[in-house]
Structure formats: structure tokens, C-alpha cells
Length: 315
Image 1 (cartoon, rainbow, N blue to C red):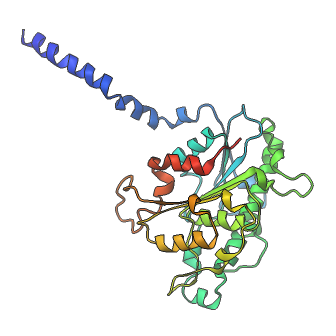
Image 2: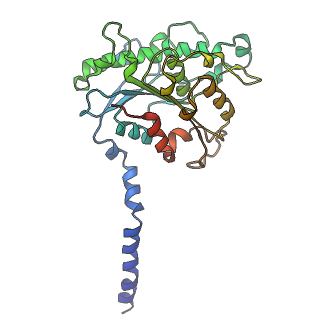
Image 3: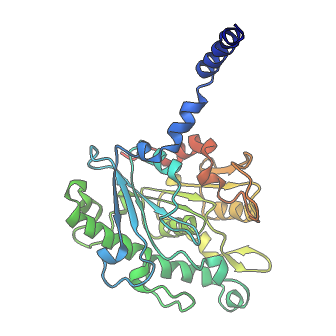
């Protein structure tokens, strides 16, 4: 008799909780990353497969795209210092794919970063150190002996070689449309750039030299011309070739370099409406991290509406 009374009281309560609060099933779905990407083709290509001269930093490039869309824009993802394609911002990637983009998470040498090289005496001796560093890591066409990167390790050569490889080995992807058949260079107007920290700074630097479809910089690096006074680097003041209205930036107001990032965005002449000073609480506490807010813009899904605005349509 007691058991019947117990179940008659408890069972309706359990059913009510399941109906009113469906969080359990939603959480389970969000954990299943493979289901999130089931409709997309995913390719992994080692840089040395695309270019046999590559000897360093041979972790895979990762490519995502919807087979049903033949001519969407490419979103080129550039990681931060010490980052790799083994750890990408999944929720942001899914948002970009939903907006119609293809994604190339490019594998390139991410360490050391500018802030580890162009500091102290090195910066005092060469106030243009940061620009020289970035030029070497992006294009590989200059001499800069403070980092071990070789020309085949640079971002743009690796992108070109990957697109050439995909054109030959993934015919259904129609990858040749992203290469200028006369010059062999990327068709930048069909390529958007997104990057975190060092990668965000790389995206901004490229935007000063190429007319890309869009730039999204998440806390995009803080380069200095003077370490002591934290005077921002001179290269930020050069004119963008990419249209300023297509350049976007975020930073969290509580991250360590928030003031410098605000100055950088203004120096780059990014429209005020395209700069997002984030202020929501941490997604989760990070023990031992002296700059815990630095990755919030790219990792915290509370900012998804901002991601969508910055991404626009990839079609």
C-alpha cells in the first residue's frame, strides 16, 4: 500500500519535471559534436601532403563544408599563440557553417607569438619588430631571424598549397574557384578571415594588404613599439585595403590588454558599430590563468548573436 502511495505521488512529479524542463535532452544533444557536423564534409590534410617541403608544424589543416553549396565564401580560421587545429572553437564554427560559410582551420606555426619576441631590448632595437614578425609569419617573403619559420611555413603559402591540393583531390568541392588561375594567388574577395589573439592580429595585418571579404578579430593581439609605455605598434595606423565596414573586432572589457585593444581598433579605423566591448561573466572559472577573459569572445556562446552579426552571410 505504501509503495502505491509513493508512486502515485512521485511519478507525476517526475513527468512534470521532464515536460517543463527539457534541459536534460538539450544538454545531451549539445555534447554530441558529431551530430552537429553530420551534414558537413570534413577533410584533414597535413601541410606536408600539400607541400612536401614542409618539415615543421605538420599538424593537419581541417576543412568543413556543405556539399550542397557550391560557391560559398571560405572562412579562414587563424589560431592564437600555442594554438593548433586540434582545439578549435566548435560552437563558433557551427555558427559560421550555419551562416553558409566553408571553413578552413589552417595549421601554421603559432609559437612563439609576437608578444614573446618583440619585447624588451629586441623592441628597443627595432620598433618595427611586430610588423616584421607578422610579415614573415604571414607571407614568408622577408628575412626575420628571430623566429624559425621558413617560407613554406607561412600562412599564405600554406593556404595556396592547400587550395591547390584540394582542387586536385576533392573535385566536388570546386576549390579552384578560390585561386586566381592567372596569378596562383588566393581570390581574397571570396575569403573571410577570423582569428583569436595572435590569429586576430594576423587577420588585421592581412586586411591592410589584401581586399578580403570580411575580418573578425577576437582580442586580436597587442603589438607595441615601446614595451615600457605600451605604445601600440606603428603598423596599426596604416590604411586598410579591405573596406573598413567589413572589419569587426571584439575584446572583453576585463581582459588584461583591454585598453590597448580599444586603441588598436581605433587606429585601424574599424567603425564603432563593428567593435564589441564584451562584458558578460566568465563562461567558467579558469584556475591559474592570469588573463581568463581573453578567450571569452570566441568561446562563450552567450555572444552568438554578435558572431552572427560579424559573420553576415557566407553565401
